[in-house]
Image (cartoon, rainbow, N blue to C red; front, side, top):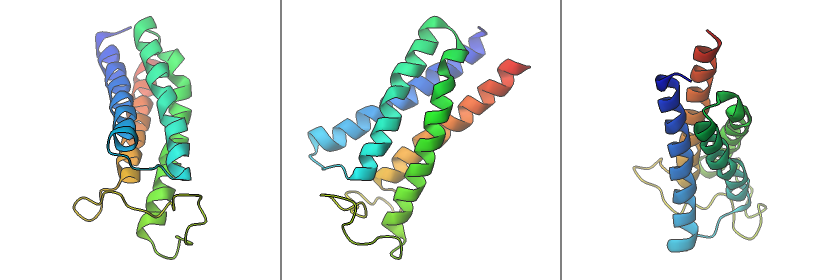
Length: 138
């Protein structure tokens, strides 16, 4: 495996690790209760640490292919969750579960919420993985 691709693979692993640690920090340290859609995003993000970590250790980009699928689905879930938070017509009260999905525990600069952070991580992972896929096929 080329050193350049290995560096990008490390970046994918690091982003997924930081996103996982961030979600655990928000829930376990600060005490923010995750909503149902947050759980779906966690289900899609947490395996990425193992997938990209294994791909990095084995130096095999093909192991990371499920990461592309999980990050793509996770990005769509995050975009929808962010829309529920920011577009009042989409938020239908607390039909999401015990914690309403439109709750904004953080709202930095008027737009940075937890689903925004997760969505950013998913989208970066997805785009970088596509770039690596394209580089490797050349």
